[in-house]
Length: 341
Image (tube, rainbow, N blue to C red; front, top):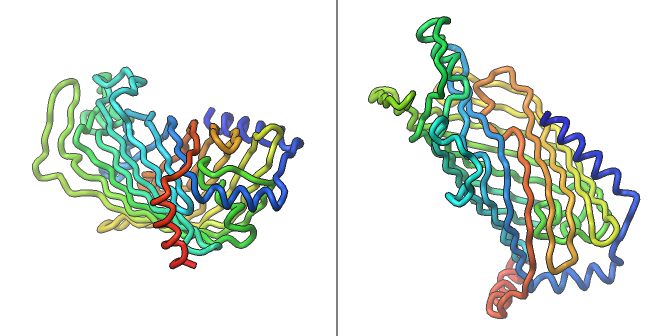
């Protein structure tokens, strides 16, 4: 079902590319100069499908955060993108907290260009509160195959922390054209084809799994609170297409095959493998306000299931606007820009 939705979204993007509406070179130059003194803000909603692996007696069980929906904000001024997201209490989408527990999500990310060809992203995230998706299988492993009770094993204090980043080099394309591939805070200006290679790196830690709740009973293992840590690196190379459509509409799609290595720290688990990282988005942007929706797929052909503690797929929608930045901010950033030149 998930793959069918992504395929349908991709078909929709390319069914629209026959209509083109580009800016001239002079219009692009004028817009970029004016955009230097504007702030772009986006607020939206994302659905993220996360699964975390927990190894027990040579078998990996799946843990999930219950709060899959979260509120997302993007703030962009000149060359700096900041993203901030969390799962607020006002988002009453999940009604199964008593069965699966409550989850809290937090993410802080930055995107910026170190040089006109070199882009850097940094993200720090945390998920607190997980539940066993494979509770029945786990209980049958302990109590035997006759165990048939319903319910989920909850880890209310469990924390999954992740620090990740990517340094990518733009082989084909210009910085001003590539900016809109970051997120919808940048207005797409013309039809673009880009090629890039990125070096991705990530460190993860799963901790506080010694307290569990099952059918209102609380269990605490004082001796089993050793965090599980892993790191992964990947080399991604691929390309993206941006197509302008009639009346300020646009479509973007990116595909990056990757080779990666994963290592479970302090354990004898590691692997080399291949995967695919992709993005797709369709939106509207008239220069003052904008909106759009997109999807992200991160697939790894993992033979060792202990390394699927990553985002498998994501869907987001957002609405944003641009306004003039304060003059004192412009002056200070002019000084920084002169130093960076």
